[in-house]
Image 1: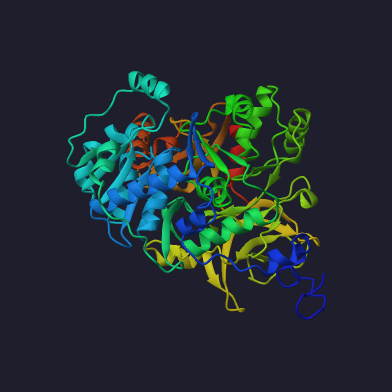
Image 2 (image 1 turned 135 degrees about the vertical axis):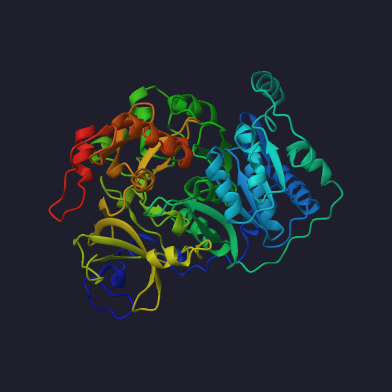
Amino acid sequence: MLDRQTGELTGYPSIDKPWLKYYSEEAINAKLPECTIFEYMYENNKNYPKDIAINYMGRKITYGELFENIDKTAAAFLKAGVKEKEIVTVALPSIPEALYCVYALNKIGAVANMIHPLAGTEETLYYFNEVKGRIAVIFDGAFDAISSEIAKSTVEKVIVVSPGDSLPLHLKAAYNLKVKKPKLDGKVFQSWKNFIKEGIGTEVREVKKDCHEMAIISHTGGTTGTPKGVMCSDYSLNALMYQIVCGFEHDRNGCSLVVLPPFVNYSLVEGTLAMLSIGYKCVLLPKYDADRFASYVNKYKPTVVLSIPAYWMAALDKNERADMSCFEHIYYGGEGMTEEKEDEINRYLLSCGSKTKLCKGLGSTELMAAASQSFPECNPLGSVGIPLVKINCRVEDPETGKELPYGKEGELCFNGPTMMLGYFNNQEATDSVVRIHSDGDRWLHTGDLGYIDSDGIIYVTGRIKRIIMTKGRDGQVTKMFPDRIEKVIDALETVELCCVVGVPDKNRIYYPKAFVLLGEKADKGKAKKEIQEACVQNLPEYMVPEELEFVDDLPRTPRGKVDYRALEKEAM
């Protein structure tokens, strides 16, 4: 490979950057947007007010209407006293109001703190208090869990939104008959309709803010599973949006099927905001049903789908016929997939008329979402593509920190304009994953093991960190962190040690199982009850173990660590 600056071969990916051969000189040399995420979307769409921006369960919302609804929402926030740089928590599913809030807060210089709409009482209150939020916007399905405990938080006003608020009239009537409306006091808890009504007449002026300041807080479990707020700047968010679309041709007729909720950056930034920034229409589904994938395709004719392996495999298992000739760019991310399964899904898609195979990427919330992305010409089975055009990648020896040459396995590290500002109020955690190298740049240490081949294509071979994908009772896919569950169980006096693994499950993808080693005099019946109570009290419902197995010993690796891989095999 060739060092583009010196013309000399080095053998090190981060210097040679062989992946740049897949990009145009225009993309390589392009200047990234230096504006807010609202400005980026508005400037690219202001001349097309009649184009469709959102299709929500059959209700089509134009870009002109999107701008109007953003302004109405901004006026309501201003009327409620929201100031520049104030943090407002948004806990909504994939509904239009979620986008109105994100863009409206951005337009007036405030910050959207995006959280899971059904995180559970304790975790939701934690998120409220973490940012000392005064105002929150929540999903009505979370009202019962939050209403009686709101006094334990800093929040003074809660706007309650129903997925029915923006539905077409015939669906809204059916939804209102099916779902009981919560009784709101009109003071602390207020309906979305009344919230917007109160803002009428309030002047909205766009705030000219520094694009390098915080715009959104997204949450990740990181390497330990402890909730951390990732501070995302306008510049970093726009940098990602630009990069993921610069490598494929597109026009304003595209359609993105949004299958994941907006508290996930992969969905919010890549699947939604980036698509709106190029004039696509986004299909929003408040509760995606993986078994209905074929019907969604037939109905909406999406050109872009960003999904996860579990959803693609569900479509394969269902094996329903649909006309997939509409597909132009389809991706998976979030976790890995075997080469055999990827090939099987590709054959299924092509048999349904798809013009493209599955592409994929690797990334993290700390990098806004994706750091790599594959294209048809650099998409071998088992790979995760090449670094985005403005992103650099290196493989380090985890022991020495030295960069490794092509083909050598080590920790994957990334550097570039999509880097987070840091974890909110957590410099120690920030410093543990973002490190300044000898080149003076900030590098994110991902905890993923892999290598880069001589073409610049990245392969992931394992994880230093442990993350398991699962589904909660709301049906949404989310990440489960064994380390976090283990901390809760290990804290009990009767427990000597435990190890949590994921058990494959058709309905939940994986559910958590805890292998527990008790103290000598512990009573198993009492211990089981204590463990269950501690988990229910301290964890989101999707992390509460479905199975507990008491063991006489836990297997160990040659280095003396608990061998969770052996337990995973045992739990299969």
